[in-house]
Amino acid sequence: MKGKLLLGIVLLFLNLPRLQADAGADGGACSVLRQPECRDAEAVRLIEMFYADYVFGGEDYAPGVEKYCTEKLKRRLKDDYTHEYDGAGYAVWKFRTGCQDGPGDVSQVVSVTALGNGLYAVKFIDMGIEGTRTVRVVCEDGGLKLDSVE
Image 1 (spheres, rainbow, N blue to C red):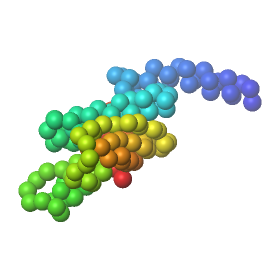
Image 2 (cartoon, rainbow, N blue to C red; image 1 turned 135 degrees about the horizontal axis):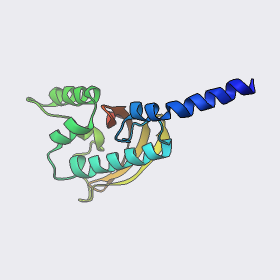
Image 3 (cartoon, rainbow, N blue to C red; image 1 turned 45 degrees about the vertical axis):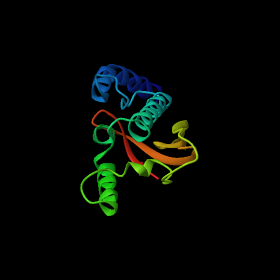
Image 4 (cartoon, helix red, strand yellow; image 1 turned 180 degrees about the vertical axis):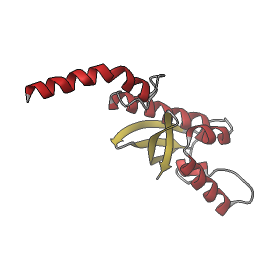
């Protein structure tokens, strides 16, 4: 029994370079060998950046949605937009409180907390109004992407 266990460990270490290559030569966020804490830290940075640049920031949101959202989320945001407006766009308001006006002009992320299983609680202030959303981050095409927002 000990011999089989030792053999298994030796085979694992002999295949480690191949496993690392299969996980992504770039050592990206989706590497199967990375610790969950590393993935969480990268997901938190992605969420904070997305909110700062594309949800609350002055950047045109469409390139951010195209780059940082999965196809599933892009479809949902497009569908929700066309239910409200004519033309094409993305319902980025799904990431916000839904209030049209607030008592202030401050809009920023307060905290992002990992909930497990790719879910993150985002607490923010939206024009002075406190809000919370839960977003899912998944691995797609070798990088992290936003997959849902509730």
